[in-house]
Length: 409
Figure 1 (cartoon, rainbow, N blue to C red):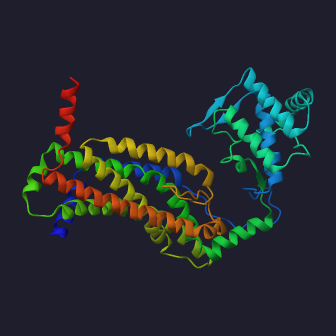
Figure 2 (figure 1 turned 120 degrees about the vertical axis):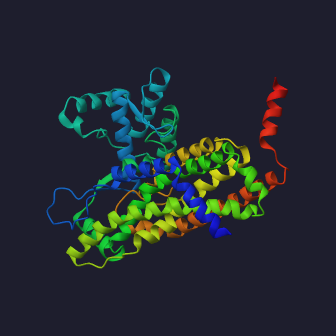
Figure 3 (figure 1 turned 90 degrees about the vertical axis):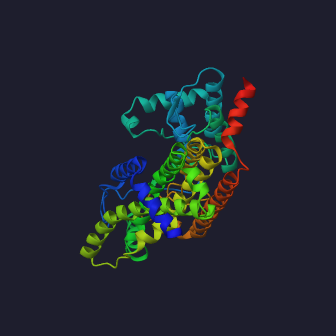
């Protein structure tokens, strides 16, 4: 019975316009992010640039952050991301004076000296190297005091600035040496076997889109049955509520996950081609492994939220609820773009390689993915329960809605 229902649900998916919109959006997003990626090349001695990295050295973090503050103070244009989107803050009056006082405190300079430094900087050609104005922290400033003062700056700017604890370390970009670049390259070749590094990047990008699009599929599928009054026919059959919900859910998971695996064949083929030309060993199953462990739980959660709240409310409210969760996850994930993961719905690893960070936080990533898999399964159990209650006539969502509207009138 389950297999028959599963097969039927898969065919229903192929008749759903929303499913093809999902495929188009996913393909366009993939092409925009990974359609033309550069394969890693072995660094050579004497190159002008080997890239940059974020430093965790407190002295460098303080120097770079204070230099950024001086630069933005002089322009009176502060870049912030209060809700994930870029916003320029221009201060006046008391708030601007407070920023000025903080800048004087962290540099040990008086107001006139700070203004003189700014005028000298902007009158030179060094301005093209912004957003940093070279200025040193006070010798009496320790890292704890620095953190407290930068939090004050962030609060004055309304939050989401480069001075908050979340973004502060991203100010401290330092050049990568040849030795470091060569070490990163060898990690990709030897430890990641090439494909591991690109599989993580693939999962980083695809996780963004797969954390939101599946909920539209689940909501559309549920509401379509309501409009067609198909539930009345299903209720009359002997098939269990468990089989009805789980077969539908499984069909959606399979139909959404298969295109992900198909898309992964493109970066895999690029890795195989370059790997063979370099004569290095390739992990042919890296994209499948990473996709199952990294991306599948994201799909499971997005679908389960859509199924439960659509079944519970018979509305599209799941899109709003999950959309808000997705938005918050994108915003909070900015601080972990190079790895780290935490318990965010969308684990980020927006860099090729960084194998040491991946290994260091591997257990956190596994815990994260297990947690969201269990959460998705619990939501599905709740969906089966809600469906069974409605089937037995013990839960009447629309009747309650109409009754509340009448009472309000």
